Image (cartoon, rainbow, N blue to C red):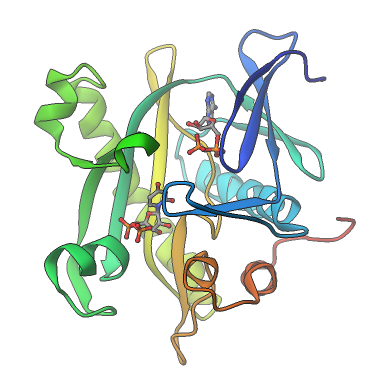
Length: 239
Ligand code: ADP
Ligand code: UDP
């Protein structure tokens, strides 16, 4: 399978059409961004590490019954996926307080959230991805009530599956973001799951092993992503 037309250049990935109208190729780039694209840097190897990492997670989720867009790894930085009609609402689950939740509500970072919370954000960089709710999402035509219910249920199931997986690698899954889209009528997990879109802390030391290392200028960003990969048994050979 080969790339044809460039459809979209995002902050971290480029999206290409293929000869098959139902398949796209995503290219994971080394570009790393934070604060809605205001801080951007190239981090060598990041694209390749995230491509392998995402493939590993998507396959684990598929084995557990989550419908995903993942089809096959193509090259070290490219993956073939189902072409989805993306729903412009990001689904976030939190097991521990961090990031925007702490800023918004003055909660201490690391506070356990029981039960885990579920939030929706409208995907729009110019507006800074504002928080929204189900009612707004339906009224503004982004998704139906049934689709939102499905997205929420799938996001909680992903949380249950991945909490256990990261725990086995000695890590806490603090929070994460998912994006869904429609393949025909079916709600399918799209985009990526990588340390760019979640928070992972070492269980013992609470060392940050995710994109907060970049946001907070802590250094060792790709090294941390590689450590997470190695702890889970993700194959990074040949990249
Ligand atoms: P952003 O758009 O936030 O800058 P990326 O750089 O990761 O993010 O760009 C990837 C884009 O591809 C995102 O807009 C995402 O919603 C979209 N996308 C991801 N998976 C699919 C898919 N299977 N079909 C169509 N679009 C997708
Ligand atoms: N997240 C993301 N993309 C976004 C916004 C958030 O991947 O556009 C992820 C982020 O990495 C974290 C979780 O979603 O794992 C919750 O992010 P939060 O709302 O705390 O926002 P942030 O602190 O990143 O501004």
